[in-house]
Image (cartoon, rainbow, N blue to C red; front, side):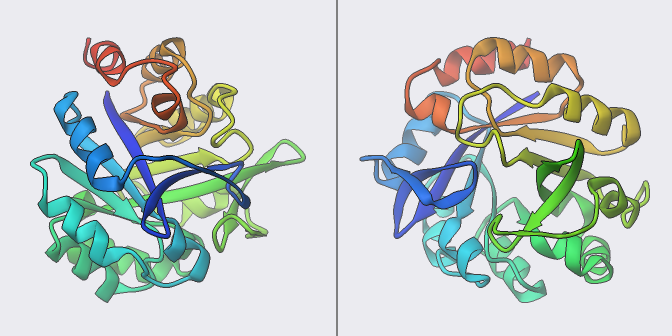
Length: 244
């Protein structure tokens, strides 16, 4: 399993949101370049970078900075936030990003996203669905987690039949940044329904036991943010479990 240490960029610095809310932001002292270098030094093979300004604004904002950060290290980068078209995907790939995260448009414009998956290659795009649990049903949220899509996660995934997409990142927004543990029931159901997708677990990971739990479910990756920033465990320890 791959551990993706997360760097969320807002106003050019590293932050974490609570429950995906832009009015609940924790700022960290680390400049992104220093944090990126630290993750690379500690053994990360991949790093997950999010342009939160772009996610909130609905357009690319921090992509130039993301390109600078990506070129500065020898670690693969998965990145998104504010991706609104093929030009944004191409720009990030040209900047050195290995895999581009497509979020809201995966829900609202599936036909376009299917075309991008075919055009750029399924290994270059990660579908990122940020879900809220509404009456027990996972429903993707849109526009920087501020709006409900009104369709279920399962209906959304049906737009991407086996063989079309390869990478899926699912965040339980209710657990994101809260250090309450991942939604293993949701992850297990996704793995059961769509074993063809390489699933990345996101939201709530707070301990090494959580890392072991998502690995046991067969997840391909785990996004880890606040737990690393606040010293709940070391990246080296997480990597040891993930790679065992």
